[in-house]
Image 1: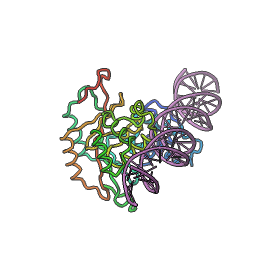
Image 2: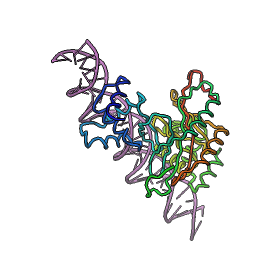
Image 3: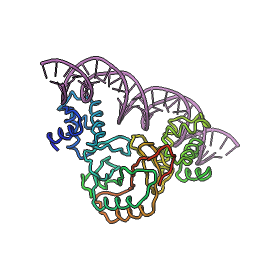
Image 4: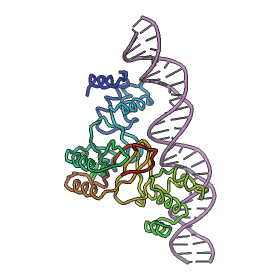
Length: 146
Length: 146
DNA sequence: TTCTAAATGATAATAATTATTATTTACTAA
DNA sequence: TTAGTAAATAATAATTATTATCATTTAGAA
């Protein structure tokens, strides 16, 4: 997703096209690492020293509310962000704090079928995800997963 | 789990049997609501005004480290605790902030079978849970789920 | 170009949690 | 049973992540 698509996505939601929103959104789009708000702030401030950390938080919240990005709670208690909004699962790697995307059509099918059979009285299911937790066996060897 | 079992569980882990640990552990065991540390503190302070909030946090952390309880991150970003340590899933109810246990043998079987087939290179899977998110359709009507 | 609601920057405030440290206590071993 | 000692606790300060406040700026409509 590049500039044109970002501006299109923002205006489709009735959001004003601001430099800050473009920069924050693009920074998240370019990172597969599920960064924190702080990490995004650190990443953009060299080229955009005037953007304040509060704006980064606020912008991310706005994008989440408009379903342009996702917010991911982690076992450490901090929030991280994900530019992907399609249905996918995460693997949280406890010895490196990485969050990896994990996508598998078979898994999606299995879960969807399972839940469609179940009856939940008085409850409307809005989302379901398999949260996988693991440890890298050899963190020194770099990312090499699945 | 009553007093005798609590003390047994603590000493089996080599932990000193203190009044504070017994009180905190029993408070969590008696709550199915996945309370926060603060809520546990509030619950015990009437009968135990001398126990400090820092001790509640520390005790819970100690119990988590010794795998006597579980720590559950929530979409609000706060941590909650769960006395159940057997494998089970959670339903997070976004309009009431409740966390419900959800247990289903069929689901366990499906997930275990799915994951046993998958190959994860360089990664050791330690845990997996289905995180279900939903909304109560009529929160006024009380808890009536599944 | 002007106008106005919305967005931003700077910073204060809050909430949740962790660290510090002096004091107390559970367990060990004599 | 009673010291002795490492571990645990209470009180509180500090930290971290996040949100609120509010004066100023700006995007987009008229």
